[in-house]
Image 1 (cartoon, rainbow, N blue to C red):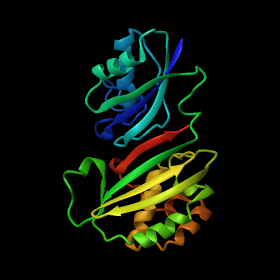
Image 2: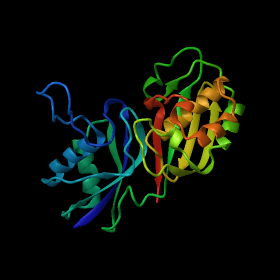
Image 3: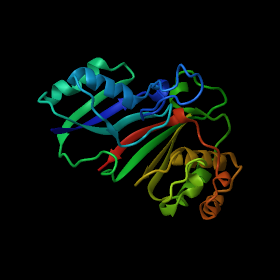
Length: 255
C-alpha cells in the first residue's frame, strides 16, 4: 500500500466546491445525484487510472467558486505505477479546470488535513468604478474608494491567537473557534488589490468574512478600532458581510 500526496491547482468557478456531495432535496429524480466537485472529479479520474476506487483527502474544503493554486491532498492505493505516470495519468482524465502539478510518495501516516500547520489564502479585488470582464471569475468587484491605510490598521487587530467566533459562518458553530492569524498583508497595485491571510487554521468562511470586514473599514463604514469590538463580542452579525467566493484562492498549505 502506498500513500500518494498531490499538489493541485484548480479554477473553482465551475465546481460546487472541493468536497464530494450529493443533492438531497428538490426533484426526487435528482436526489442522491452527485454534484460536480473537485474531489469528485479527481476520484473519478483515479478510478479510471487504477481500475479501483480511491478516497481523496483534501487539506482544505474550499467552497463553491473558490480557487486553488496549491491545494494539497493524499490518497492510499495498492499500485506500482510510477509517480510520473500517476501525475500524467490523472491529468489525462481530468478536464482543463483541474491540474495535478506535483505528486510524491509520503509515509502511510501522512494526512493532508490533520498534519497541516497552516494555510495561506489570497483575496483579489478589482477596485475601480467599472467592472472588469477579464477578472470577473477571479476577483470581487468593489466600486467604492477604499482607504488602504485604515484597512491595514484594522488588520493589525486580527493578528495573533484570538477567538474568531465573530468571523465564522452564522450557520456553522465549531466548538473551538480560536485560531492564530500569522499575517495579513494588503498589496495595492491599482486597480488590483490583494489581501493575503495566513493562519494555523480557518473557520468556515473565516477568510471571506475577514475580507468583508476590511472592505467595510476601507469604505469608512467601520472604524479600524471596531475590529477589536467585533472580536470581543463573538457575534457574527457585527462583522462585515461575507466577501464573494470568486475572489478567494488557496495559495499554499504548510506542513
